[in-house]
Image 1 (cartoon, rainbow, N blue to C red):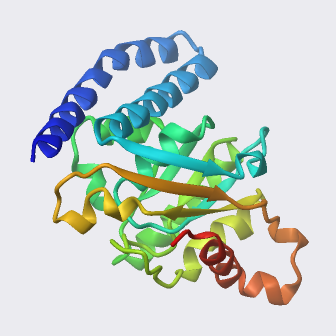
Image 2: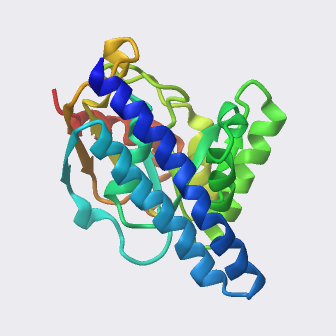
Length: 239
């Protein structure tokens, strides 16, 4: 219980602390310093992710980071076990990135503000028309040079068993032409979801597979890219 109280206290304080950087972000924009403004948003998210992991005493083992292209945007496609998958990808990969996120997150004060500044895209999976627009927005973000994180399961598995990948979300890779990096995230559900919301320290594993370029695939592989990526992630998951 003490760990849980400690974590949520630090979580609230850390979110509130990010508001200090908001004026700087806006000033950089007014001065036309778009590159510096972009870096401001990235590093706020990067260090916030590290603080969250520290507060929960999460130890992260990272493998295959050399498979992440240093230059240009990529689409990170990962399995989704826990809410902690987000701070892990924010704090363990020093590459500016956005998220394709569920619409409910748009209702959280401050967090929503920073997600917009990071060019995150909100999707309502129950609204087909809005979902199509969200995928198109993701493509636009990628073409602007920002990487994107997608969880094709559509929701947290809250356990070690991975759900099916929704084919529609992978249209981002098809239409954008940027490399896809499969990400296998193992053990994050043990931090919170397996404990009825209580926070417990855990060791987790993140493994990045070699990038896949959609245009280099055969027609049959392109039609089944969601299953190919899911199989790669499945093979890289730790027990």
